[in-house]
Length: 111
Length: 112
Image 1 (tube, rainbow over the protein chains, first blue to last red):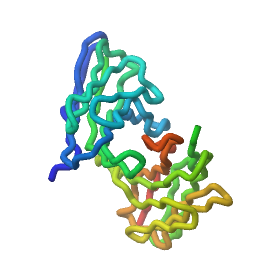
Image 2: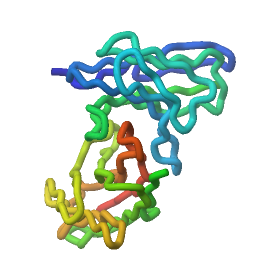
Image 3: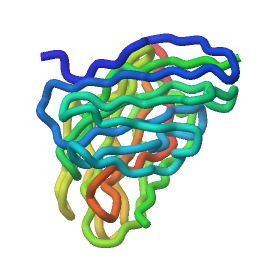
């Protein structure tokens, strides 16, 4: 039972490059979330998916897209990376309104 | 919408000292309240939770009571250890009940 897994763990991109961050959960949760974590800013919600087939914007969606591929997987795509997107990206899953379970994170640096 | 404010850190304590990290919230309705902890180099994990007024969540010697009258959920521990050094996040459910809203985190550093 792996919980929430994220790949890759680390990534360095040049400005303008694109990439997709992968997240998967094996807890059969309906809801999944993407956050970014920056020093002094706490966690800010980028996008979430309340259930399979639905996605909604969070607090900071600009520059990102998401895909809820199936109940297990929720990916986050940066189409044209910018230095302001240097951050730690956290994926989480839960039943709606209940405690969230987090993955280990992806540390992204954009140069 | 719902929001949460927690005390800014860093908080620096000696081992066996008493810990309080303040958390207050603004909410419509009756949100669930959570404390998460992030140890160095690790992901966030749930520390404790409370789902209704006057509930007390507890885990690993930490406690927090859901106080509706003061809209607070302060985290306390009677005697901290070096291993408690981490970042602590207060959180509550959003108005729709579909996501959590997190505070900015409080860094705790405990020295021996």
